[in-house]
Length: 249
Image 1 (spheres, rainbow, N blue to C red):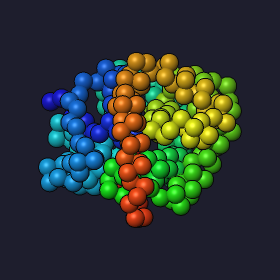
Image 2: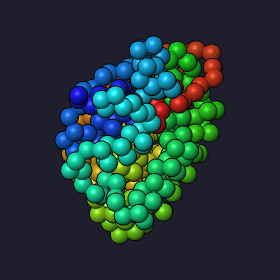
Image 3: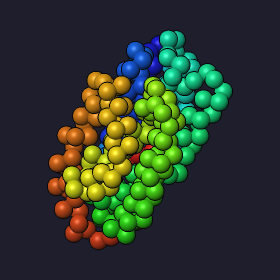
Image 4: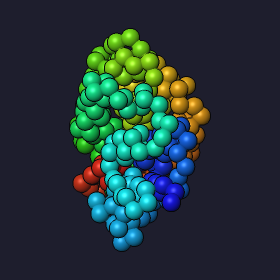
């Protein structure tokens, strides 16, 4: 039975799972689960993932949610996956795990919160929230600074000094690519100062071509639409915003 991916390509962790499968020749059926249409709340999807978040997978009867757990599973369950994605060496694997764990409460929280508060909220009937955006921007900038000064200080093109990408590189790059939804000035202001991060993104694009760019096309196409909604949404009274709603690990 073919692997099923329950994903929304507007979700950064969903994109990471899709890209990993494409890069490694894993055959799959993509089951579109659109967050903007609340499809993740359906009884049918709840049978797959009771947490009601994407991505999720079904491999035969086996069901799994949380993108990092899915990436680990795919790297171990399917034959022929190159060791650099999820190294067999205990010490190298532990380093990958440390970055993935850090990602949850730092980069993801900042990037998802900032893009939601500044661009995506109106698509859910919520107002833009400058106060929340300012809070998440601090987390995002601190996270980019850590990637720049800690994870990319060693020799090697990728995180932790590796010469080839791991699942940590894939997950974090997809997170940062979410910033493409911002207007150009805002994106440049946030990420422009981090030259090592920008080079790392370019190296990841080259290492993962054409699939990283291909899977992100939906994000580029949606950008104009969301910025139109942004101005409409700016007239809606302020509401409580939960950035985790649109994109979950």
